[in-house]
Image 1 (cartoon, rainbow, N blue to C red):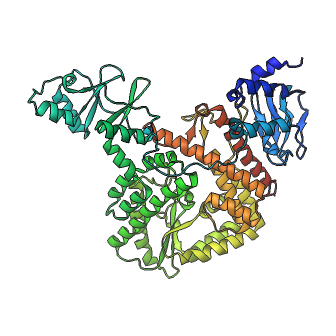
Image 2: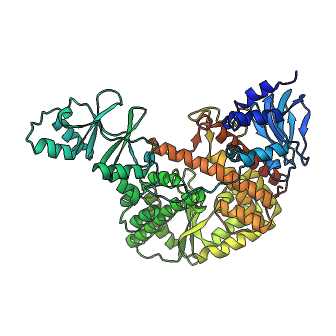
Image 3: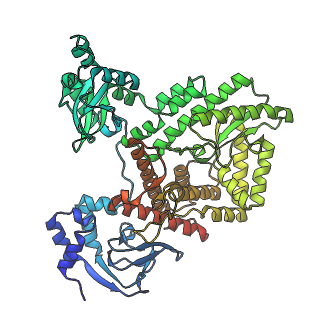
Length: 608
């Protein structure tokens, strides 16, 4: 039975971005949609065909496959597809067929192009290219929720001023929010109130707080910005502003918070670590990294900038610990180089990082010298653990004698891994191809990197094994709204934004670096270099870079949100926390990754 215009209009009102269009605009576009009925197993379109328009699933399920006939997505009701090809040259970059009897709404190309040209909400939804965000870390324009202290200390109004003074002393704070019941704010008491209203007037210590507190204090919402705080403080001559949302106290901003916000910058943390004398002093600095993460993300910084700045802090801590270690143990008996691998090696650390490191020694090192470097490695790795860079669970650290060896031994390692790529060799090579010098004599690494890349790229069997190993991490695409979540355990129904999100792209970048003998280690730099060298086509690189940016930034936003809520940052995201808009974009990003994995798995590093 054909769909009526009323049915189509009603359906569009339930789908983003159409639900955000003005009623008269939606009524204009609804009649332009054609209804297609597709029987199970029949094709919607084939790879390389001219697309008849944008598709929207009204009923049923559609299976989308890439150029290698690998299924990359299953789409259900309210899912759109075909926009990638339409926004390029109108030619499909995938194929689609009906998994079951389906009804599709099809918006022809010309109305589709007009829709995204005339309406920003549609343009933002369908055009998945990266949008540059404003940069900076400006106090005046930062949202209050990134400035405020969460879970402010409260006290009932019938408590005494002595109770309040003791509580403020014990908590090391200069104000108390007064709450009669629940989280409703009734007043505020500050040290100025205690000195000016209690001590100056010689009131008894048993005076109830309600007699001296400031009632109905100035408050702001979490959505206010820093300039609102600054203006209110200057105009009202106050130093504390409670933050209230829906009538409930959710935080407080003080002058100290504003000072701390301005002080927390990567440069400030780097400077403090560089002048620290113990690991414990450094730990007090690295404890502020989560707040730095929040500020950098809130300031609109791109994900590769955020991770680079956070990694700089780990690099500085490592070099400072090396210097302190040499002060304690004496000068190194032979030249050496400390290297990082993993996320630190790639300069991609976030709010959750362990340590992965090793030492390359000059070939003049003797057996007698090894004790010195064992002690140095222990000193540095213990110090990094104290700073929050926890020990590597896989023991990929310089404290493991296997990873503290002369250059000639390292060359032997790589030769063996390349010529006999068993599963352990593939895993180790994947880690060690992300090495980056941190402290010591860099020349020890230059020849090793160049020779290894040359030998690896020429060994097709090794490259094939590395490709196979890289495909073990798959994007979380499934039937339920396009996502395959974790099935059981602590993180059931969540997405692992590390192992199923960024890691598949990290692995692809490493393969491209091997194929093109690229010296870049950072993932985004590898993808850009792969395009410039011709290892990856321009269209493939553009799609993958956009996908990587979206996935990595979604991960950072999730971590920052947890920190703002007083939780430790992690990599596990509930799809339900995302809007339909965000889910759709994230699913499309995962589809791009799946397509590039399929291309490289079938012997082609180019897509497009």
